[in-house]
Amino acid sequence: MDYECLTMLSTRNYISLFDADYKLIINYEGVLTYDKMNEVLRNIKSLKFKNKDLFRRVYTVASELLDNVYRHSKPDSYSSSFALYVSQENYRVLTINPVAKVKSNVINDVQLINSLPEDSLKNHFMNKINSSEIDERGTIGVGFDLIRLKSKGLLLLSSMQKGEDEFLIVDVKVKF
Amino acid sequence: MERVFKYTGTESTLEVDLNSDSGKFIFKGESRPENAVTYFEPILKWLKEYYELSKTSSVNVLVDFDLEYFNSTSYKYILDIFKILKEISLIENMTLEIIWKYDAMDLDILESGNDFAKWADIDVKFVAK
Image (cartoon, rainbow over all chains, first blue to last red; front, top):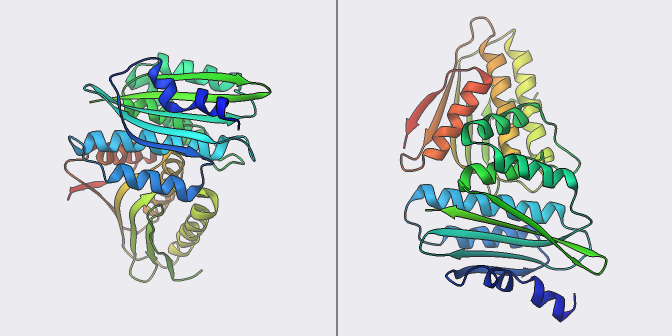
């Protein structure tokens, strides 16, 4: 990945476009391995949270987003970014990763997830858990449902094109 | 089938101890395995074999869940485990009790336990740690 692209796609630059009130707590940029994922999650466990519920929600969102990057990034490709920020009102978890293509069914699924009230979303999630099969990547495609349930906020999904490469940006606020 | 099934827990996988002689089943820790299929399928296979065995020689079963965290894929597999436990509980003369431990400050785990009980249609005893 060239320097210009790395700069454009860093989580720090992304968040600076939207809000200057966030303090960076954890940042990782590189090819995400399973060991690195464990290290990032260990770092989150070492942080002090206001209460266990808030820790659990941030941890769940971070774990699911890291898993998404780990399993769905374009193989042998560019670095990914993960960042955890905090403000006076919420935590914010960001990931940016290269993908072969942002599929329309993922966008549609996130739109549906964002539109559902909590009770309906819970039923939607459990129905998928109950009826879906594990795919070839070892997942069942309910990570975004769980992220929305635990964050109690919207999932912001966007993408960026750089030449022939496409990058998926997922931005989630976890309210206090 | 093997009389005992064991996994040593790691920072990302559960400690699992299933003992057909004592009827004590333990699931403990955090679950977000790198490969959920190869991790969970042997557990499901053992439980299905135990179900078949229990039709002829049943003992009382106590299932102890003491979970810290599980990811969305593990959610699916834990529900599958609950469904097999439900089948085992329906065997004639079988007594099966599920204990679901949770941190009183962490209601998320309690809520998940309620989900599994509801979707597998099985009674669960909730115990605050």
